[in-house]
Every structure is written in structure tokens, then in C-alpha cells.
Length: 211
Image (cartoon, rainbow, N blue to C red; front, side, top):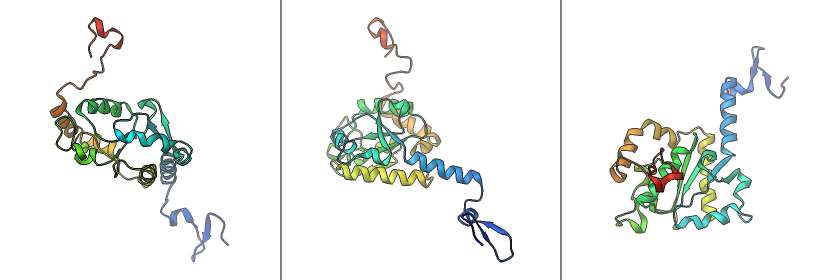
């Protein structure tokens, strides 16, 4: 006779149905649960980097309501899991994006909108915009379109959630493993000192505090 968790095998011993599904121990069960909870609580830092930022208000407000999927906006990178790079990135902006990304707690993710972060888009021949963000920071999900509508942005959230639930290798892990590669590329375009420095004295900039 079978219960909700156990069934009789041919030799009379009890066999756990969890084992049949590949969840052989409590650790596996907990890991799967944690990944599910994590996928349903994605906090997005409020940082609009390009023209695609105009798609964020409708995505997060009543018509499309991304919060029903567990995706909410937060004010600071310390609270955030995800940063959305919504369009082109100038080198000046890249400095701030790197600083914001490195302040985010792990696990952390990057989603890009449009073709500009992938290949430069319409700014492919501009002297002050990056052509391939993946050389400087790892991208987890790219949403195509110029600019993608809220439906496409939500599709991007769904894809990211699936990858988190499946335990796929995330960009922050690649960033840690290939840290020297990313830093070398960053230094090549931004110089050895990525402003603002961690030692910046914001209250005394006019009186000689480092910026």
C-alpha cells in the first residue's frame, strides 16, 4: 500500500519516492528549494543606463505588474540581486556600473536590453561607447529589441528565473573565476584607477578629498 511518500517495492522494502526523482538526500532537497525561493524574489536595483529605462515604469506598474512574479525594485545595490543595463553604455557610465555591480551581494545577475550592450547597436562606431559589455562584465540574460517592450522584459525575467531554478552557472561565478580577465579589459579602457575610489571622502571633495 502506498502513502504520499513511500511505496512497496517488489522485495518488500520501502522505497522513497524522493529518491526515484533524484533527490537522494536532504541537502539536494534544500538546494532545490533555495533555488526556487531565490528565483521568486529577484530585487532589481533602480539604475537606468540608457533609453530602455523608459520601459521600466510600465513593466513594474499595474498593467504588467512584474511584482506578481516576485520581481521588485529596490533603491540600493546592497539590497539588489539584478541590475538591468537598459541600452547603450558610455565609458563614463561603465565606471559607475562596475562599481554598482561589485557592491551587489552574491548571487547577483545582469540583464541587458537591446543590441547596444551586445555589439554597440547604432553607436557601433562611436568613440565613447562600449561595443561588447561581456568583455567587462558577465551578462546573464540579453533581451533583444530596440527597445524591447515590457512583455519582452518579462520574458527575460522568466528566463533568468528558469536558469536560477535549474542551478545553471551564473555570471557572478564567471566573474570570480575570470576576475583577472575582466579587470584587465576594464583597465584597458578606463585606466588603472576606476573612479570613484573606495576611499572617496564625499563630504570633503572641495577641500582635497580623493575622488
